[in-house]
Length: 37
Length: 401
Image 1: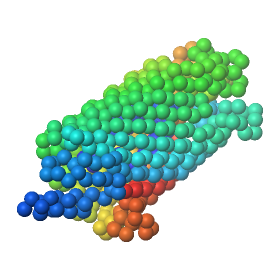
Image 2 (image 1 turned 180 degrees about the vertical axis):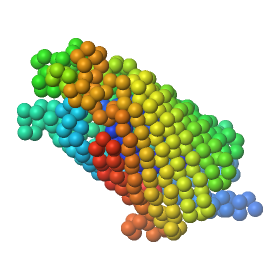
Image 3 (image 1 turned 90 degrees about the horizontal axis):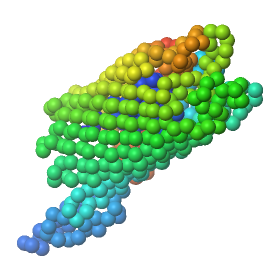
Image 4 (image 1 turned 30 degrees about the horizontal axis):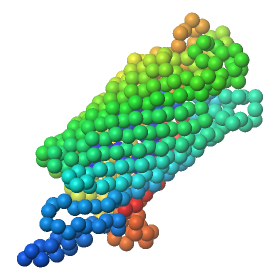
């Protein structure tokens, strides 16, 4: 089903993971794999 | 009659299959013997730049100027076995290169240090087994990430079940990351650390466990919904030891945060198709963790198809978070606090992101007359936080088939 994150949003999600304290519930990881919050 | 049937089957297979790397076993059964098929190849690259004045490396005050160039390649390969089960493999390689004026201040005595620039390399492999007859799939994968002071090994496994009419999908996925920090302390503390959590040059572990649940439902031909719930737990060195924290008496310490963290985000996606030309994509997430963060994320992405092969999208995202319990600005942490940070990524703030995206699909002649390029998307986003950080990101995504 076409409800997943678009590939073109991939790096936007990455910098939001670094610049914000929350993560997850978007099909990606909730944490880990990087030295970010 | 039998010869006509075989000829018709052969013609249908040839015109229904675009891959060069296939052979067809001509028999009258439903099984089709196939070699490996390259389903698609994706190339995604972005340029990111930011600036602000709350660098965590210098205690919450100072430049946050940073640029990052990130690129990933991935290839999707599939094959059917003798039982008509589909096997998929996705191999991805990512490379990030960033320069950071604030990381350069880890050692403020130099004009420019090695920490000014870093490169991260992150490969991953994910395998999926699909039983199309019984409507379920199993997946598993491994990933890695390497940069100067941080390495990660990740594993994941999951299960997806479709309803008979394929209008409902449930999935569960578990992930674990086994990471290692190489501890870098600010230059002033390398011989006399401010706490006994870690010394300069130590290697410390960080382990993360995630369980993701997702339920998607096609409500009708115009409306789709998805519910997402994650449960996350981390333990190990969770603070960034080269971040400085200035206490009320002027004493400078290395950031110190708890060694466990529990996270629970809940998300909702909704897509609505208004006729043939307009799609509304929306997303909401509520996040809670035991460090004191509560956050809300809401995004809208209306997309307009102005021709059969071209569309424009205007994404907008609003985000709000409360501060972690351990955050205070520079010079405000009391000496008896057990945990302390002046990292404004963990402070209370609102942010907005607005952008513009153009997407074009292959109309038959390829894109830029290159037949293998199936789609191209160019996406720009401007991000602004109410504590002064602004960022720009430009992304190019190409799909080859």
